Image 1 (cartoon, rainbow, N blue to C red):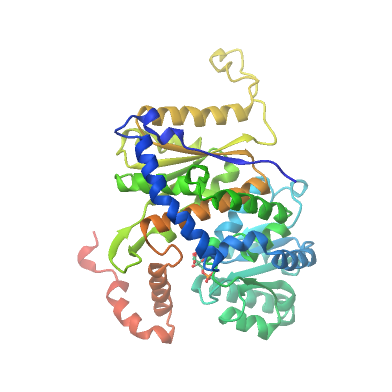
Image 2 (tube, helix red, strand yellow; image 1 turned 120 degrees about the vertical axis):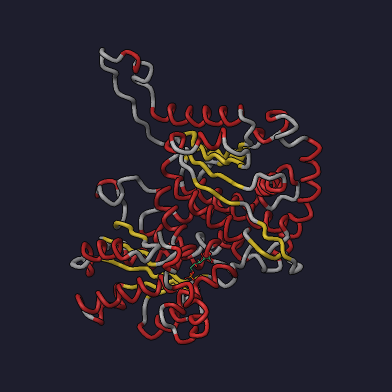
Length: 468
Ligand code: PA5
């Protein structure tokens, strides 16, 4: 059993570091505790009542069995391709970047499964390039189409294109062998097609929205196929479940994280920057961006009143973005809360090479560990931000492994739920995304949306009066 942990560190948002004007005083923190404690209780009872279904994902042993069975059947393929978008792709990408080596796809020695590709878009250049490469490898390639609704235009387009290519190159009878569908258990277009064609399939559990679904079959299959220990991932989430269910605010990292974010939002720090000091964690910053933005950006509160709330999540990467963003972060408007992700043990290291005699000024680097450099860069950047009175949180990973990644996912999902309750909004819907989806269907000629298409027409053509 793994014992590695993530630790949530929040001293650098407190008044004792930032001063009373910029930091949170003990009194304010106690007020946040008073405000948030009943919300933890509420979330716990909603969860018990079966209304927060993602919280139970760490315990879905049937799903794990189903996923492992299919993974075992297809593991020998050369290429595994996820067709999906948003919540049906970002978690897959994040797990892969976090838990498999940087050169996984290119170096056979570094990989324990097939190459992994996740489209997450409908860019013709990207997809054409992939299809040109994969066209003669289709008999060694498995496609996992993931769509809860089964009606998302991007995923449907990827799917239809791939099906067309399979039919044309290796025959219609091969569709069943090459495609695995992950979709709603009962309804939707993809479920209908799955039944008709007899695809191997997995379920997106009822009541679990895309952005909360990485620990379901949505994220688990590609992870398992690529050699990631999904049991450890879920065990890590289950471990965090214990912590984030604690009704003692001061011991509950999800509650403290949500409350700090909410506090700073209310005093004008409406931008939330997640900055991993680890390449492996960079795509989790993307995953977080979706989770935070789509869950908390809402026009109406739970009473139906207009509120137009939502912190803006931003992704940055340390140390790269020190040379791109930090000038703004320190000297621009003090409107951001920073969350660093740091890693204590990278599990490997690189010794920095020797400086040539001609450049003794580089000698201080020679022979030092790269991990020491990147971790010192994090400390240095945080120090510089604190000098400019910018509040900073840290999530410190003992190590990046499935167990800590599972903890991280569950921590941020639960923090999102608690933040949703603090903002008094529905964190689980995305009405604004739906309109864009409908508009795409209308523009693509779907006859069910003909009326909408009429409304969009004026925006379709560029108005020459405004072209310069
Ligand atoms: O979080 C969400 O609900 C969205 O990002 C969806 O995951 C995304 O729009 C894709 O939807 P679907 O899985 O229904 O194709």
